[in-house]
Length: 275
Ligand code: ATR
Image (cartoon, rainbow, N blue to C red; front, side, top):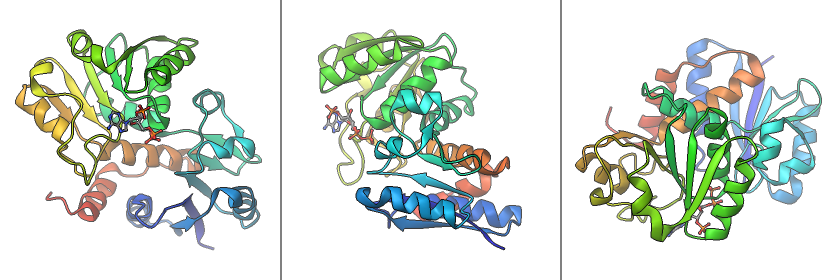
């Protein structure tokens, strides 16, 4: 019988997760299919129980369900600390994981960049930033967290300090701290379609030894990454995080490694990018 995997969220129609997973499933020759379902927050518990009862192979969660899921699943320690779940596995009850930060870590590492002992300046303190900061701290990075709303940067830095090194700053101190950074990660929505001309950092503030990773992938070459290239910095585009977080979820569910190149090709086609 065909194994069913799914992503739940609301809105969900633009999710690219079915595109990348179904491309990988076909390439692997598996009898499986990955579907997107619109699930409202108040229906999450029923939807998860239904998926479990119907023998789904696994479920991903996206906006607005990641935090709400903590009430219904047993989170692994890191998902519990992050405070959000994007992957639910039904093998032993209903276990919750968060693969977003692992996806970001693999995106950086796959560019041949090691994270241990690096100074990572993280722009943002929202949901994605929390997942990224915990995984990068675990991997031995020193984090500088910068956010428009300073209290959120402070609170995230305090939480991350339990497992690693983290300091926080307001946006006004951004320029000063970029000089110390080896890796700059934008985990805010700034620069995302339709506001594609926006960036929190311009080329004058960057240096040529910097690696700049933008988790925004609409467009792939954000204004931030264009500024980074103009300053001589190395860039990493955001679609890699989407692919690697998905592949990590599939590995948790099945133990199978999905092929990156197949997923990347399908994703770039869906995004209308030239390959
Ligand atoms: P996600 O789950 O994608 O991380 P989120 O939790 O809503 O989304 O977080 C969005 C992040 O982008 C936050 O860090 C937000 O800053 P605030 O905490 O100050 O709201 C940041 N962000 C969004 N728009 C921004 C803007 N115009 N300038 C600076 N930061 C912005």
